Amino acid sequence: MTTTALPPESAYRGGVTIDHWTPEDDEFWESTGKTVAKRNLTWSIFSEHLGFSVWLLWSVSAALLPKAGFTFTVSQLFLLVAIPNLIGSLIRLPYTFAVPKFGGRNWTIVSALALLVPTLLFAWAVQHPETPYWVFCLIAATAGLGGGNFASSMANINFFYPTKKKGMALGLNAAGGNLGVAVIQFFLPIIVGGAGAFGLVKASEAGFHLERAGYLYALLAVIAAVAAWFFMNNLSGAKSSPREQLAVLKYKHTWVMSFLYIGTFGSFIGYSAAMPLLIKLNFWNQPLPTVPGIGINFAYYAFLGALVGSVARPLGGWLADKYGGARVTLWTFVAMIVGTLGVIYTLTLLTAVPKPPAGAAAPDPATFQYSDAVVTAVNANSDIFPFFLAAFLFVFAATGIGNGSTYRMIPLILTNEAKKNASADGLDAAMVKATKESSAVIGIAGAIGALGGFLIPMTFGAPWIVDPVSAVKVAFGVFTGFYVVCLATTWFVYVRTVSFAGRAPSLAGANI
Image (cartoon, rainbow, N blue to C red; front, side):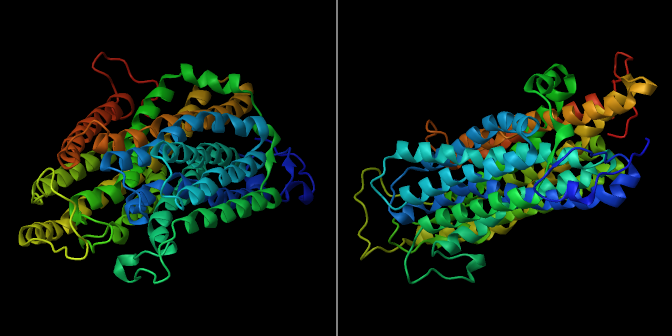
């Protein structure tokens, strides 16, 4: 690729629109592009991190609502957890298209300020125990705005990096965002005055204040918007119309990768959202908010799944760069199958906790005592918890690696297709088109994949489920079967060299 004289250094400072951007040119990348790309990546990660935290705000808050005086059923709480994930998945498509339309910097500012809506509404609602459940559902839906940040952030960063650097860059960007889930699940119980950090932090004597989390993240959203204004850039070369981007819908690989991403990212976000309630449902017993609970406190451990999955994501990108995304994704699904079978096995070992007889009067908090049978069952289940947690964290690690490897595959697939179909003198234009289209596919796959964040919590505790404890076991069995299908799809489309019909796949031999 030929080099051209670079614009002055001021053309690449934060806050400006960059007209000359050729990251595939090694000389440009080393002299100018690398520094600018890292700066944009840093602030993109910060904004996306906040988006994920707000998106999963309800994952831990729902489990704390009874302590704040709200009397919602288990199914209602699972629905509150699931609603933001549904909206977040649907909103990812327009967020993806917004980057080429309005510019990455501009849209980061808008998307950061949009987080003021769910955070301030949350702060208001949790201070009023008389707030109807349907109002909570509407407010939870606005948290889906945080889920859209991922799609626009990933689409934006994809433009800044050369093909050979995209795996690690996209992995870091996504991991920084995914860590927002672990951060909100770790710190929210502490911020609002509850216990946390494996029991090292005790409940505050100043009382329990869920609204603090809303106010804090509203402030951080303003900081993210200001930082994007001063330090990020728009790329004029990234401009394209929604019609151009929607052209990728006719590509087979768009739909295959979207399906696989349901298995990886959909599992990560779905399990992350449901984990606090899963621990509380299976390993904690507290018949009244005013009675001390016994068993495993979800606030001590719920953040670990999202943390492990987030940290593993860059590893998935690195492994995909080194060994090929398809192979890594294939083994990811093998690991997820093994892990979910392990989770199912631990759940079969649990002892049913005796429940009060139907129609029995509510116990008096002043005189309440746990029966010996309840204490024995809860203690037995607590002994099983380390094995449940280990198996579940193994699944989370696999989802994180799979997230990184699948997203690494997308730009390589489209780049290989562009190289295969372009003429020698039209290769540069084909590569630019491939970059734009890979950003669109990343957004579409992210939107479809995020549906898992809605489906998984709903499978655990939909309104029509009578026994959530039994439903959890059945749900993990269904998920295991789905991973088997994902495994077969990965092998059939991307790993095998020749199909049973004697026709090689379009990307046979490519290191995807």
